[in-house]
Image 1: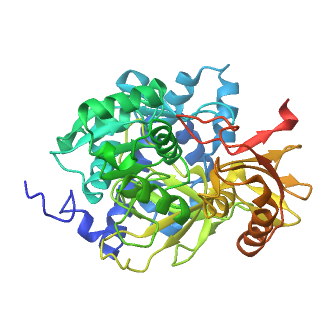
Image 2 (image 1 turned 135 degrees about the vertical axis):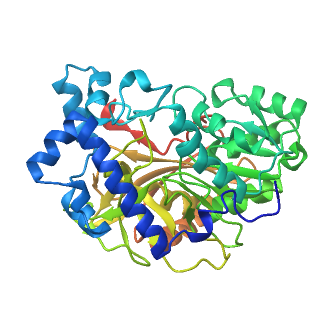
Length: 450
């Protein structure tokens, strides 16, 4: 196998984001709709109600306008309808039976019922697994690498399914998992000298802190690649620069779909590498009407995984607001690109200004090392509406003098005004006062739940 080739799949990846690929997608969607109609009772009824005939769909635009959305609310309603029996729900919406599944993963379920990711071996190998190996290959991961696997291994799709999905690369997996804690992660890295870190950017940031506590230089850990996902961070310039500088490694952003960022010196978004596996579209977050998929377009991301068995999502909202770029990337790699603007669940409105946590993280991260980079957005009532000013807790760096805080606060408020169009109330904390997490970085302090 030629390890110098640009793509893992040299048959498919060179034709991403082309008219030829759109024909492949349309044909794949029509076959998928027929499978659902014949085997998934929920869609049999739904298609009959709406008059959807898979073979008669003539374009991707017609698909988007004639097939209904399926979101978290729809899933919750079905779970209630079937008395909380989510397996019965899956039997209603999948083209295969529950007994045909081989692994079950979920989302974290932080905003309600965990969204299931049911998988057959086909899903594991040829859908999710294929997308993982395409992304890792573009990030330069090869057979000789050792992957320090630091995503949580319990249930979530970023855990065991992703580790198993990437096995065809032939690289060594070191499955320590976020649950093991930072001390164990540091020990495993010291013993087995992983070359690739695979985990959340906030955990990578935490490992930098642990190194400093132990008097170690993070560069001495020997990681050359950071393959990050699960949360914003790897796509935020200030965070990228901080982590790459600390580890002496290149960082790649992955997730929120079938994509991975490229090695361009400036973040260009993530290249969607799975157009033959899944169809991504944008809809208006309020009306749910389709948004034209063109360069610079922004909307709520909706995905149809038409190549799957258990992973057979049909026009399912991913809960992200994304911006897409269809023009060629300056890096030269194929695939349209997308950036995550924010999570729909995390959106805040302050005097009509829309704010997402990654905007706050970008501003705060720009003031490291005067601050630690850790922050919490304090909410006194249920979002999205926030009565101004927006309150943000920020840790000063351990070696930053307290008498310098007034000047620093003025600089930070000016940066917030320029970049996020708001002037927050800053609540200063000492370094280490905010709780760290080995799983996902915490961004909110929800006083209204206490």
